[in-house]
Length: 149
Image 1 (spheres, helix red, strand yellow):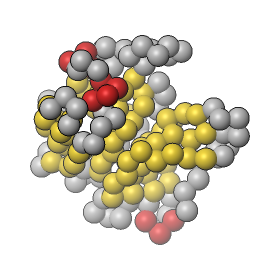
Image 2: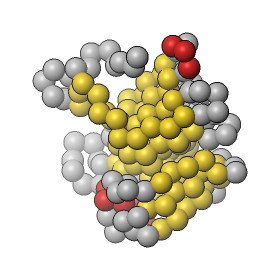
Image 3: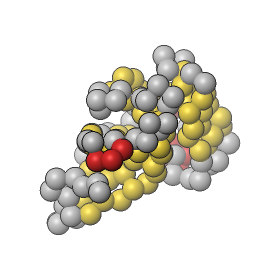
Image 4: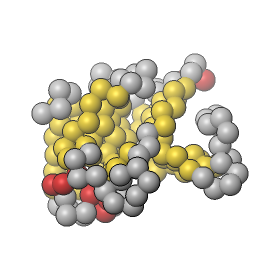
């Protein structure tokens, strides 16, 4: 069972599972008035614990768990309070197992439309030393190491 305190509903955009049984998800939680906030969450196996991180203004759309247990997301970020994308915001975000942001990589400015590039049928998967992502919309393939290179 997964829940977010104060949320009336939750939308899950993507989920992944780790070797230890942990499940990660990217999505958004909404209150009874329809106000929402993007999030990334980790759910440990057998109800041990869960971690929920509110990520706004970053909106994660894809999530995966790397071999070291850290969580990676791909998403887009708008300027706070605006519908315009921040060209300097990183598309990739890397989180440690406690929910602390380790890093933000690859600026949205390299995409003609970062929001569309991360809202298509694409794949974010663990790689040998980080993650790999293919954006079907932009036709681009990325491998990002655990150090952000």
